[in-house]
Length: 231
Figure 1 (spheres, rainbow, N blue to C red):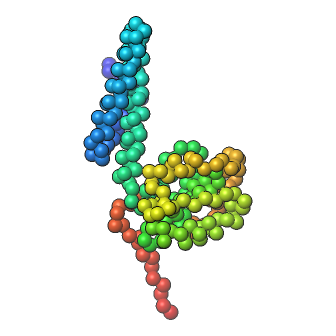
Figure 2: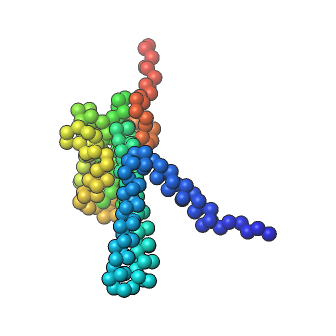
């Protein structure tokens, strides 16, 4: 009687397939990326072998070097894959929201709390620093959106700091690949309890608009609403 595969055996092929898919995307985005990954892993192993020769303990340092090489290779692979992801989604509406959704730390992200028909939009992230409004779009168009949204939530936010961040390629804006790093540098002004209380107040506010989630293809347009009937 054949045994059914365990959960771990079922998950392993899926993970390997996912790594292969990411590797293919990475190779297309940057042909030098995978050679860099292999070079970093091999370099780590060589260093371990050299140390083993110096101390006369190859039997110990070779296994350690293999494990270290795998760890270093995976770290470099992950970093390069993240950069490739940023490169692929850069310039697409919703790119900043995709980054916010995967940001490290205790953040609550609400996509597209404000926007217009040009697909300029403002996202809201609530965390230990306070409220962070992140805009996507040309600087001249998103300024009024940020100002209006800050005014709309200021009463509910009370004395909590409200930061505004413009994501884009214009002067004074932050590239999408540096958004997460910028948010991680903000000071921690609130406790976890204060963050939860702030979230409750902001979630009770009515949404000013609804937009599709995630990055949208270039050239996409906002659907027009129904025209008012003339009486």
